[in-house]
Image (tube, rainbow, N blue to C red; front, top):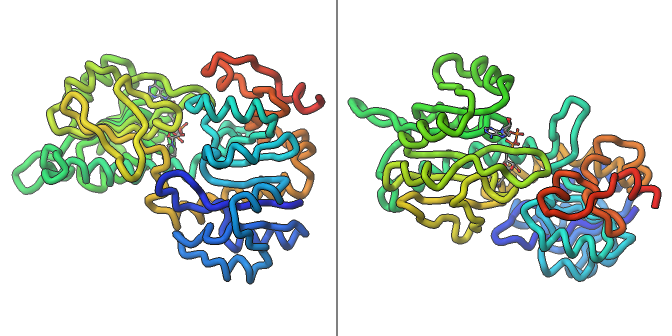
Length: 372
Ligand SMILES: NC(=O)c1ccc[n+]([C@@H]2O[C@H](COP(=O)([O-])OP(=O)(O)OC[C@H]3O[C@@H](n4cnc5c(N)ncnc54)[C@H](O)[C@@H]3O)[C@@H](O)[C@H]2O)c1
């Protein structure tokens, strides 16, 4: 199969979908891999490394898309890429369509097949392609949050761990899944006084077994979030309902109640944001101030640790890219329940129920779309 790896177009997105080692695995299985010139440059994977592995370097974005049957990328397609969508092409990438109605519309209108990384799901309910990025985003949420708490960044001028004779800063994390627990690990490691909330008691048990009584693991209700937020210098939103727009678990009143100069990091921004006050920002202009609270809403946070993220993402995606390439996309979708649940668009049909509900669009079962 002909597989394409473009250079990412999102603002300051430095990750690349496959490392040279990953591309080599595809070539070993007899596939042709087109890599756009400079695709891995920002993470120190040179064109020569890809060439040495047997990749064909493409000099333009158009050349990659036009030559591909399977287009593998990191972030959702950029508007400069919409023109290359076509019915016989499969795009495999993060899609987050519930929060991106315009991308959903062009994908449906063009009849391109779209499989979302973030919805590939194992039999035990894990999201193996989202997990490594969530871990990295969770860790970065505390690094970014603590940076914007500093005085020169219009923050409260606080260190998370306090100092001799000075109390630790309070950090509240809403959502104790992969990103929430990774944030917890870093905030706890930096000496903060951490409260983490979730509606799933099993997630709270995982926090307990990892941190014992060093962290407060609290069942999530609106009053419990409100109480914790009012005392926090750093609030982190890390909730997810797979496929759906993020639930608005943080109200404007909760944000207003936080001390002036506090920071709110919305990791769930890629699914539309989990606070009433959230809006998407970009890596070149990551924050805005509202009600005295610095808001951070970057949807591609892992790009700040782009090399780590590229390697983690390749390890996670490669088995699925191989399956799609070896079997053919339609056959792989039919054979693999893990991939089938991640099918979002095919032949103009929207095939994920949560995405369809969030966008108020018609839903078609993946099985039905696959046999049409
Ligand atoms: N901004 C970025 O760059 C970036 C990067 C990676 C992941 N993400 C996003 O981060 C979000 C979290 O991902 P994850 O992998 O940690 O998800 P996860 O499924 O591991 O965890 C989400 C948690 O939210 C909990 N939850 C759901 N509703 C809740 C509520 N009302 N109150 C409290 N908890 C609630 C769930 O029980 C679950 O434990 C997703 O939207 C994901 O796409 C963003």
